[in-house]
Amino acid sequence: MKALPRRRRAVLLNSLLALGLLAGVGAAYAAVGPGGSGTKSTASTTTATVQRGTVLATVSGSGSLISPSDAGDSFVTGGTVTAVRVQAGDKVTKGEVLAEVDPTTADATLAQAQAALVSAQATLASAEAGTTTVSSGGSTGGSGGSTGAGAGSGSAAGSTGKAAAATTATATAAATTTTTTTVSASAVAAAKAQVTQDQAAVTAAQSAVAGTVLYAGTAGTVASVSNKVGDTVSGSSSGSGGSSSGGSSAGSGSSSSSDSSTPTGFVVITNPTGMEVQADFSETDALKLVQGQGASVTLNANNATLDAKVVSVSSLPVSSSSTGSSSSAVEYEATLAITSDTSALRTGLSATVSVDTGVAENALYLPTAAVNGTGTTRTVTVVEANGSTQTQSVTVGIEGTSGIQIVSGLTLGQKVQETTVSTSTSSGGGFGGSGFPGGSAGGGSRGGGGGFGGAGGGN
Image (cartoon, rainbow, N blue to C red):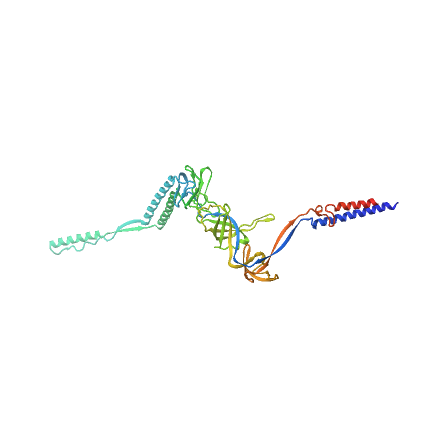
């Protein structure tokens, strides 16, 4: 009777150990067995035939349309707007008058500058003429010559007296007058400098007067007019334009256009002539772009397709920043000129661009999946007429989106193996989904428990 408790304790201890073992096995099976989640890859083999045709390699980017002909026109001279001759939607020609400001102040400034220039020019003429000094001097004659004293008749004496008088008169007339002109080099230099300064002032004033009238810098359609009659605008030649609060605006004196944004100004004119698209490409694809390559541009708004050519590729990235653990891809901007009709296009339309980076016409080619390896020398698995296979080395050329050019190693019509790998993801329910091997689904644990209970009951 005393051995019975010890036996029960042994059975209980063994039962606990068995339960622990079963739990460990169950956990491992749930992790690796059919009840777990995983990715399954399946390879299928088909036969591909060497064909002849065109292999086209392309790279893709995205961007938007711009027009170098778009312009923002603003006043050179500020003032009160006295006339606005256009409105949004109007068609204008280059040089057409768009608006005017009050020229009163500009006219007065020009008149003052012109008067100052006239005065400076007179001063210069005087300085160049110099200062004149007049002085007199010279011979006063002799003693009058012979007087005929003590000889000859009275008539002779009279004749001699007349001759002496004439000699005296001639000597008096021979007295000279000297005129001396002195020109001051410093005075001339100063006068010339003043004339130059005043001439520049006149030129600026003339430009200011002309700047009170705003002309169209390009032909096109008026997109916007920023001010109205009575508003005060300020003129500038800084090159930027825009409107400010309170009915005033600042603008450039000449038409300004932008390659990367919508132009601004008193009047903005759009012109689709010479429309371009600026698109961003990944760093890998950007290295394949070359000036002159052909491209197709698809407008996202209506799926219209346009022809284009690569004009330039920037050497500076448009994005390369990183934040935290994630970093943005490096991209480079390319500009492409649209060669299709651009009359119906608008600045800012978004587009997808596909550039032809390589083309092989009348070439042998295979699906990319049928060719193994990298570089120009690769391998294929040739399928013979009797069904046998052998590995063949081939030289490849242009690698397109779905096909690759075969330069040598195969002939038209030969068949090769093409292996396609498909991937599927499965998920299971652990113990509840499949249970232990050899046990009932969902009931293995409970069945084991019953066994232990029976054993206990038997004792």
